[in-house]
Amino acid sequence: MHASYSIDDISRAHEIFAILATSPTHELRRTNNPDLYNDYVERDDIRELCAQEAATWNCTIVAMQARFDMPGERDADGLCLVPDKLNTTLGYTRATLRDAVLPGSGNTMTDYYLIVFIIMTLIEMFYDGSGEDPRTRSSITMRVLQTEVERQLKIGAEHEEERDGILYTDLYNRFTALRSDDDDTKKTTKQGFMHYTLSFLDKQGLVNYAKDVRVFSPTAKMDAIMERIVLTDDYFARFSRFFDVDDGEIEDFGFDDDAAQAPAAGKDSDDAQNL
Image (cartoon, rainbow, N blue to C red):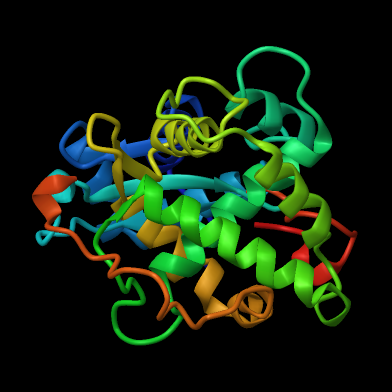
């Protein structure tokens, strides 16, 4: 680590962090700020200063790489700021996440846990935690996600005593009590829960959600967070134990590319505490 830094270096690093902290999606894209991006990736001193400032704010800076196999992600080179597990300044508390996803009042904590379980299922469907590219699918329809969420909750409820950490029965009863309706603007329907969760992830820059055809895919930002944070330790192995990985009963998840941080649900278990 450098013993000292120039005023210009400090100013440059502060400018990078300020953009990351104030951007609605906490991103700095190469296309919008090429000089700042190049300074970060090419200069150790700038990276060190940025890392120090991020640590002060309980965050981590992650570099994103463009995916040329995904049309919407070909200009995705950049940086993103990821709040640490207990950071509520740039992240969300349980209540604020729940209300940010679901519009209006009357939301319950069970709704929050269901939202997080949907996100957990989405991650499990897209990433397997191994290989050079841990992403296993390009895109999924909202209907397939809905089917898999219900399947996983049903299996979990049947074996709840073996999977301490998530109240599967409560979540399964909540989800199956929701009506099924093609109108996905109502939070009283299964489709509405899917729609609002995916819309929230889209707003955060984590998925590209094509609402007209109800198809979504992870972004380069999601890939970077998964590869550089979630899949770098034993978290994913602990995370995966809450899911049945035999998806043979469900149709193929792959579609043409052109078609298209929060605690986990239930008991206060360390294994299911943070997403």
